[in-house]
Amino acid sequence: MVVCAIAVLATGGASAASLPSCALFAGFSLTDLIGQSCAVGDKLFTNFGSTSATSVTNLVKFEPLAAISNDPGVEFNSLAAAAGQSVLFNVSYSVAVLPKYPFLIQAGELDIPAISFNGSGGSISGWENFCKGGAGNAEACAADGGNLYSAMIAASLPATAYSSDVTIPRTVGLDVSTSLTVFGGSAGTSVGSIDERFAQVASPEPATFLLLGTGLLALSRIARKK
Image (cartoon, rainbow, N blue to C red; front, top):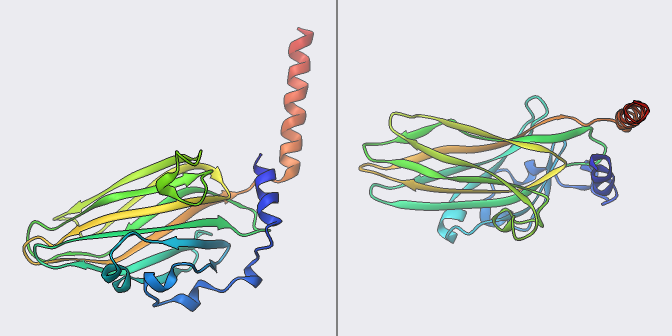
């Protein structure tokens, strides 16, 4: 089934050469990114969307993240809440391994490397959702016949950073949605950046599947003879 999925993706015509680099959108607001598609390393990012208020999506800036151990990703930054204020932020998109790259996604990773709680009572909370086999919208994953994998996000003093990851059955693509509530507390809360990467493993080659199938067939014949 994995080989079939890769073949389907490869016939879609997308390639790193035919897609704009996400570097072209560095510094763009999330509002400007909606409807765009771009590539970072071996990953295609597309179907960007947001349910945040326009004032928030215009504030949040997009940056591509260079690969670390073959796990390129994307970053959203400049999210903040003033004292006593709650800011609701949501971003959704789809990510897939580009054709001809021998990898499968096996984990979704989220890092918030620099959190500033300027006072007391500030907090960051929310969810990150990963949908495998959906129809392009992680929020409607189950209704679309996909499988949903989620991680709760929660940070407050004395935390100055946050990270989490979700293991996902190996796949060529995911629909992703991150929803956060940033509360300013007594003197404001700021989020330096929200970094999202996708750890991966090498894809089994067709020859590997052939050997596996041959081995299983031999075992079944031995079992029948007994």
